Amino acid sequence: MLYLTRSVKSIRGTLDRFFEVLKKAESFDFTSGSIKKAIIILSIPMVLEMVMESVFALVDLYFVGHLEESNHAIQIVGLTESLFAIIYSIAIGISIATTAIVARRIGEKEPTEAAKSGVQAIVIAIIINLLISIPGFIYAKEILQLMGASPSSIVYGAIYTRIMIAGSVVVMLIFLINGIFRGAGNAIIAMKSLWIANISNIILCPILINGFWFIPPMGIMGAAIATTAGRAIGVAYQCYFLFYGKGILKIKGSYFIPQIKLIKAIIKLATPGVLQYVIASCSWIFLANLVATTGGAYASSGYQTAIRIMMFFILPAWGLSNAAATLVGQNLGAKKVDRAEKSVYKTAKYNMLFMGFIMLVCFFSAHYLISFFTDDAEIVKIAVNALQIMSIGFIFYGLGMVLNNTFNGAGDTWTPTWINIFGFWIFQIPFAYLLVHYYKLGPLGVFIAIPVAETLITVLSVVVYRRGNWKRIAI
Image 1 (tube, rainbow, N blue to C red):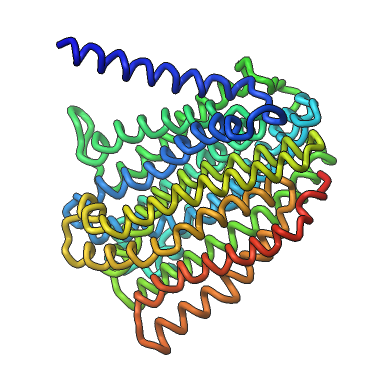
Image 2: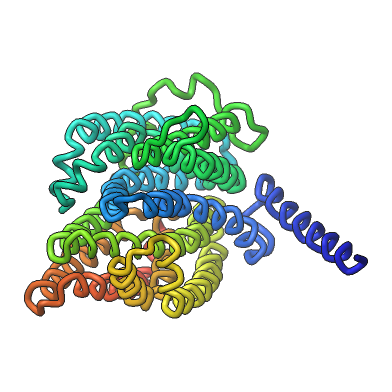
C-alpha cells in the first residue's frame, strides 16, 4: 500500500511539473535564454497538438473500419482525407504566413500589429473556403469518381464527403487560429483546442455511427457529422481565448475591418505557402488515384489505411518541427540570426531521433498496427507492405520537416515551394507512374516512390539551407 501511495505521488508530481512547463509557454521569451528549454516549451504542446490532429482520421478509420461494408467505408474516408489535403494545404499555407508575420511582429515587440495580422488572415481564410466548399459540396460524387472511387463506394459514402466539405470552414479555422497562437509563442492554447475537438469527436463518433438511446445509427454519415462537430467545438474554444484570453494578443472587433495593405502582404506571403502544400497534396491525390485504378478497392483501402497510420506518427514530428518556425521567426525579428540558426540545428537533431524511433516501430510492428483498424486479411496484407516501405524514409522526413519550417518561419515561402514542385511533380509522379506501368509493379511502385521522393526533397532542402538566403528575408 505504501508503494502504491508513493507511485501515485510520483506520477502526480511528474504531471505537475509537466503542466508547469506548458504554462511557461504563455510568457516565455523565445529570443533569449536556453534554446533547448525554448524548444521543449514550444514543442511539447505542438507535438501533442499534432497528435490530436492525427487522431481525427484514425478515429474515423477505426469506427468505419468495423462497419459491415468496411471496404467501401475505408475507401471513402481515405479518399475524402486525400481530397481534404487540398483544404489542409490552403489552411496550412495561410497559417504559415500568419505564424511568420505574427512571430516577426512579436519579436519586434509589436503585439498590436501581430493581432491585426492574425485577424485579417482569418477573414481571408473564410472567403477562400466559401469558394471551395460550395462547388465541392455540389460535385462531391464527380470528385470521388475522378479520384478512382468505385461506383458502389460512391453510392455508399458520397454523403460523408458532402458533409465533410460543407463543414470544411472549421478545418480552415482550426489550423489558422492555431497558427496565430503558435506565432505568438502560445502553443498551449493550440494544443488544448485540438484536445477538446478530439475528445468531442471520440465521444460523438460511436454515438452517431452506431446509434445510442433516441439517436438512430447513421453509419458513415455519423462519422462525418461527429468529426465536423468536434472541430467546430475546438474552434469555439479558440475564439474564446482569441477574444477574451489574457495572452499577449488582444483582439478587437475593429481589426476585422479589411485593411488592403495588410491583406496584400499576407496574400503575398501566403501564396507560395499555399502552393507548396497544394503541390504536395495534389501529388498524394494522384498517387491515391494510381493505386485505386491499378489495384482496385482493396489496394486503395490498404494504401489509405497505411497513409493514415503514417500520418499519425508524422504529424507529431511536424509539431516538433513547428518549434523551428516560431524560434526562427521571433529571433530574426529580434536580429539574433545566430540564435535562429542554432535553434534549427537542435530542433533537427531531436526530430530525426524521434523519426528514427518511429521508423523502427512502423517497420517491425506494421501488422499489429494495421490489424487494430481492420480485420480484412487482404487490406491488412497490402497496408502492412505499404507502411513498411514508406517508413524507410522517416529519418529523412524528420530533417526535411524542420528545414521546411525554417524557410517558412523566416518568411522564405518560395524556396520550399520550388523544392516541392521539383520533388513531387517533376520527380515523384513520373517515377511512380514508371514503376507502376512500365515495370508492372502496380501499387507497390507507388509505395516505393514515396520514400525515394521525400529523401530527394530533404537533400535539396539541405543544399538550399546551407546557402543561408533564408537569414536575409524581410517581411
